[in-house]
Image 1 (cartoon, helix red, strand yellow):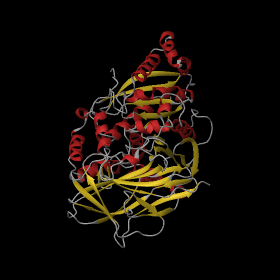
Image 2: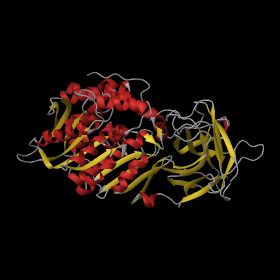
Image 3: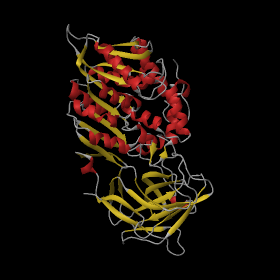
Image 4: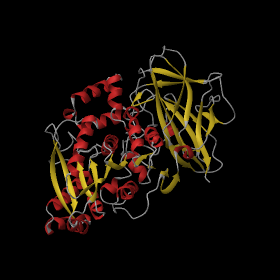
Length: 562
């Protein structure tokens, strides 16, 4: 099925990428000199000529028990001796219009490492039949049948089955491993831990990411159950059906199965992930009792592994090759042992490579900064360590429009620019102080690092019964009035009495960020971000205050550079 590039969708391959993948596919299906020669324009002819000598590639349709056809591709080593078997990697597709073809760039590495490879598009995705179930029980049942089909191949060792998946493929792989102990190891990049907390954080719907995913699935291809859930989330009806739907698709709720089997699991995510919940991935990692590894990188969803999926080098895919080599016995990696525990980059140094055994040792102790009231004649106030600052209040307007402070101007693409060394610059000096409250700390006497998850406590009094606030922790340059984002979180109050003050405390997304000497920590609170649904009534105000005994503050995991 031809696939066209869709401008504006952050997950859609470019026209050149589609042309490259189609040329790779043609060379795999028919490895003639002419077809392989076409790959010279991308410098890939030698790679796929070697692949053709090493493995046989076949595109197949696998029939499920209900008659649904699943589109798949199988690669098997050519020169196995009679009776010799090999490890196999199953690769469910990421959520992308081309489905399993997103992995074609990885086939040569797996093949040269001695693996059989089965990549497939989940039910309803790309060229597979049926309806989209979003990694639900039907998709897991399909995956079990696909493993049955794979181990029916005489070359495949049924004791050495592993999974690799990116994004949607990572979730499918993790849920399959919880159901089927024949999966001996999983590497999931841009994974999710809990689908509910990815959709609904601190009472706030992640509506922009949700609608982007729905667009990618294609509503007309979704199951009736999923379509019901889509409409309920849009209408802010978060009932037992929605909660149960998300729970059934959340690896974090499968910890007993992973731990009973001691399944080796590698997970990757990003500090500025805008699609799935980073805290839920950390919670999943923390709850695992078997061999485990977590990589957290600079950027957003899917950024880190992009090059690796295309056949180039990337930390996530190199770690995945090592992980499966170690646990199921191939040789696709560089021969080094995998690293266990947490491996991370700090913002914005892609060459940084930090290691910690667990999250408890990773996160720094929190240091409290108090939110002061603005001095006479001043629009902004201080973040101060001088003790609690009670007795002030500040009102911000809820207009339904965002300020300069937003989580990400463009889903995924802002994070990709960040990985390229171009983090978004926020002109915080230009923010309308009627729409946001801002607190700024003193210039740092030395370089410092934020490492862990900050927590904000404020008292909020909306004019109406519902209200949304969004908090952003920034790295501010006092010389220019510009800033870069460190982390953020929304919070929504619902069902309270209009005009009643409510004290709320909520954690921001985890971060690892290094601030240069002379920079300032800055907290911005406003009422709207395009990433989130907004519960505010337009043209009302939200009052933020600091009453005695519940003084407003932010606790930041802050330390020096050791």
